Amino acid sequence: MDDEQLKPCPFCGEAPGLMVWNDASRPMTDIECVGMDCITRGCEVRVEGEDHERRAIAAWNTRPIEDALRAENDRLRTAIDDASHELGVPVPGTPAPVANAARILLRALGYEVDDDHNCGAMVGEGE
Image 1 (tube, rainbow, N blue to C red):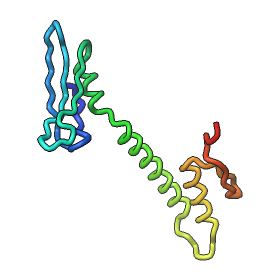
Image 2: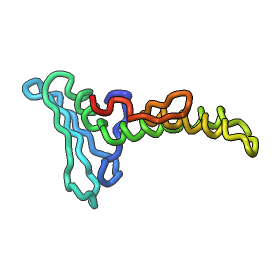
Image 3: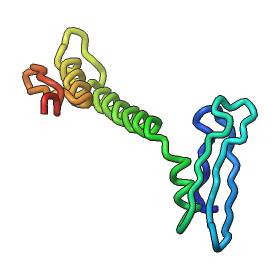
């Protein structure tokens, strides 16, 4: 198997089973959930042909929703870190640090914000 680890089943969390056949007439890799309580009862990826093992592992490990959520979480964490840095220690009665933090967060969320803190439509909206 490649150095890449197989992710657990996206439905039940169990480790999947991996079967590799290197038969010259029909080389293939089958990755299947073996969880007895899995709601899918046999979700699997089967890839045949050239480079079958690497392609099967890549297909099994592809989780577009998880990847998108991780990317969004990373983006928001960065925005929060930037806002926290910008805020420093807020001085009571001084709105500027709060306004700067709000501007940073709104920009991170995709809004166009000018230096006067006027907020426009989301970037890309209406295109």
